[in-house]
Image (cartoon, rainbow, N blue to C red; front, side, top):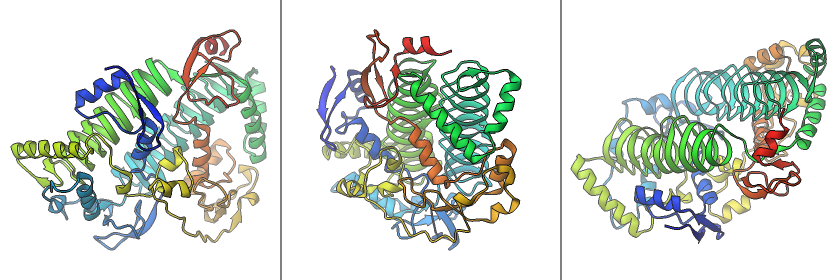
Length: 561
């Protein structure tokens, strides 16, 4: 089929369905989408609460637990160990399919009735304060991780991350701090979009650099400060004057940001990839409208955060570790998955939620190692296949099949989810669009020291700082879900002292918000290269009103040194 322009049934804006998209829909036997790519992404994100946690009682044991579900939510919540145990059977909540009702209504009934784990975790060791995490050890306040140790305040870190603090979407990192979209780093601080850099501070778009400070767009350099070369002795002497002090750090950051602004930017961060359109992409092929695609991703469209041997999928927020042939999904590492959330392992899964290593299931919640189940009811293979055929036909008639779960059955309100982080809107807008909104509860912390009264230099900080309740510099007057107060944990203090990093003045949530603000939006604009005389055009995540100078690939490569 040819490409078609259609009108989004949610935002009412026109969007294009490409001919390749139609081929994929035909392959997996679903109708073309009725919502535009951005509205579809928001709808998926509404089902992922990463960092909004509450204290509540476990409905099985009565213990006080940490949970993504507020105490007044209508869901039954079990602590992780109990939920994973044999003390209860999710099949006991199974029910017959009622063909006189819509599927999404029946699925919501199951969502409300069945117990949920307080947090989404797998293979966790001594890391209670973690969510959407697996294969981690000795971590604190982290989310969106697969493989991390001895770290805190990581969000979206994958693969071999150790001894790090305050990272967002970084892989293969160690002993690093305040990074965004960096790979293969060691002892790298306050940096963004860097690869294979070592012993450096304030880098942007640098590769293979070592012992550099405040640099932009460098390749394989050593002993550079603000893109100027220094001798080893001069470099070491100058750096000693710039680190350790909060005041000096702010001054260095200001100079670094000014250099970032005047240095030409490549239209997109694309590396070692072929035939891709999007941003923050490496080692990928044949991908369109992709963001944060890394480490062998192929034929993936309209997807954010896809990693490690992911193939042939569309419309996902987080697909990794061998995910294949997926559509309209959130957090999947399985094959042949449609319209589902948190499917880790398995294959042939449709419209299911939080199921592990399951095969041939439809409309199920909370199953582990099961096959041939629909709405949590067990069937034989023949019974299952006949029933699912009828369910799909009924869903097609109701125009449900092929669509993701509707917003009104999300387990969370808009501002509890990552949707508010990447597509922020006001409370009024959220309510107008039936996304829901949860008002913040009053935070009455007993602040013992204001951030402005913290010692300027890390060398002046005493051991008892770990006992203080520090007032966040934002004092809740921001849009970053400020905690208003925070503590310095021993792991942090040791890290700051070791690497001469002054104490932070913002709470972990505001620091996370500041990192997010450095990223370009998950949107693309058609623009021309800003190099005088160049006629090249491209799709870029830099909006036309941005102040940065944006170059095409050829003009950019002529500039980097």
